[in-house]
Image (cartoon, rainbow, N blue to C red; front, side, top):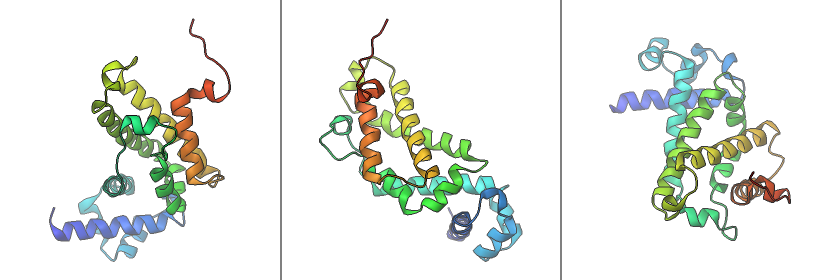
Length: 195
């Protein structure tokens, strides 16, 4: 990508993030984005058709930055309750800019953002499973398992944000992993019986 294009897109993304810390996506005008990015409105439309497209591109950038900054665990490390929970990095990352993430998880494009986040998580879990012996011995298709893990993680992050982070990132990561590893019935002290 051309340096000028990259600079312009970064400026527009940074402007959107700054505005989303203060108000919802629905309240933000494209003119506000371009004013804050110090660029012309026509420049915005050379890169994006809508502010929703800008948000999704911003989420792509955030995802790649997050992925570059974390070490992906193996499945066995993920399942070991004695290890630090690997998803702590996600909860800490969200907590660092909670105002921004709360706005996008409660916006009109929340379902789009959550779907893209699900794809990211499923992709990484599938990759981790493909490197594990569990991949060959799983009782369920890996995509089903990965989607269940993604659903739990996204659901917990969304609830946590909406409720203004009532628990620490460490606690949320530990409890999310416990539910994943032990299952909801085990965590509730019940033994599920298959009929």
